[in-house]
Length: 189
Ligand code: IMP
Ligand code: MG
Image (cartoon, rainbow, N blue to C red; front, side, top):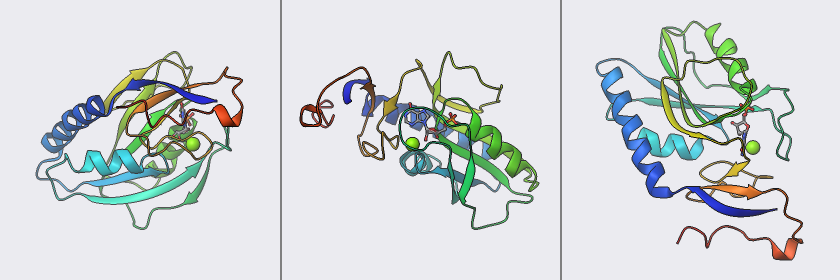
């Protein structure tokens, strides 16, 4: 297993988040807005995206788990950390790193809708194409990517690589021994 190549560069991500941020600024001007980052993956996206939103937003986090290591979704989702505040009557924007099978999102949207927010919208940096999943309205979309396992910019493989500044593709066919593993940090330069 190794980080094989850069799929989306740090510069491309930055430009996309600036675009998404100005769209959000325009749409929520004069209204209250609560950003909800879904941990752990969204911590990097939320940090960078929120700084492109020129409004006095509030932020909160929720942690759910649907993965137990490895590269495949288990389909089982549970809340491991709930929000610190009530969302009834608030404009809520969920910030996600990636939408893959949609299991996490389906569960989150259902769970949060019950709490009666005034509005509930969605921003996702990455959307995997060619994956069968329920339809979601995604108000703020980053990049559509092929159905490959990616790391970096908050996304992990076995809890590592979240701090890569770009989105990289893992080489899952690799039979490299642990000593050969390429950590991906040299790839961006
Ligand atoms: P979903 O429930 O299958 O849509 O995926 C939910 C979570 O799985 C995401 O928020 C990520 O944390 C993780 N995930 C999905 N695809 C990838 C990937 O390609 N790389 C790393 N994590 C992923
Ligand atoms: Mg993960």
